Image 1: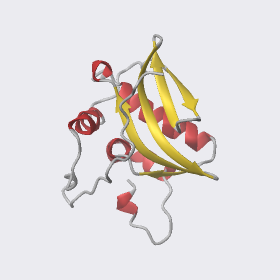
Image 2 (image 1 turned 45 degrees about the vertical axis):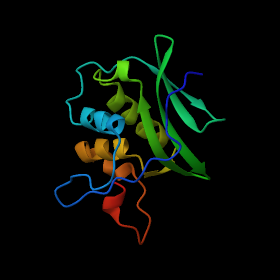
Image 3 (image 1 turned 180 degrees about the horizontal axis):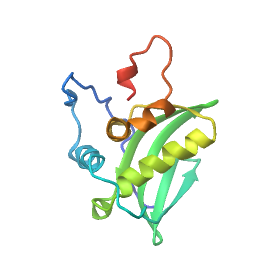
Length: 147
């Protein structure tokens, strides 16, 4: 399997009232977050997603190349989305947003409770509020911390 350079831990993205990051975000994370602000291409990018259970990773493949992944943790019916990585040469093609959308759609279809810690997924949901209802908001938690 290709080294996707997915960090084992990504710091939570804290937002101030102006929706500006107040936590350290890597340049790779920022590049992917910036992609979430772009308009989706007219045609959805073609790629596949496979589950690597040994690594708790959704692996995205296009033309035989593993170009991205989503690191997660799962317990019972709860999935915690931790980090997203897209190889630099595959950025700017709408693949990051498409991967994010497909993972959220897949987990929703499976009836999973989804909690987002990944700043890339948070950025996606901020720019696509129709997905906010798919996220789990546990009682007593700050809803804005998950969306």
